[in-house]
Length: 105
Image 1 (cartoon, one colour):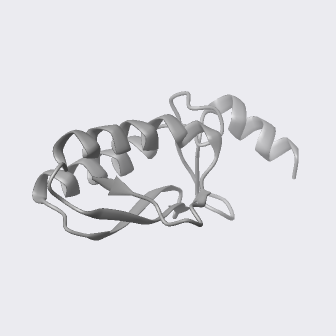
Image 2 (tube, helix red, strand yellow):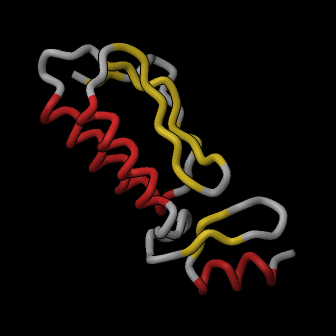
């Protein structure tokens, strides 16, 4: 079963929360006999990173990789289809959020 430390902190924006929630649900479905602790959930180089400690499996590693890939085409702010944007920090943003971000600078 997947578990979080007492000081659970997610360093991601709202657009990726559904990706993470689905990943946790999928891991829980297949991890009945495994003890997995989520160490960190964050954005790195414009995409989602999901780090765990404890027992894992090829199937769980594949689920994590798929979630990270999905984040590279999902706006981290609103959850709509997006793309990796360069210019300062790498971010995955939809056109609308990207235009707002550019205008705010």
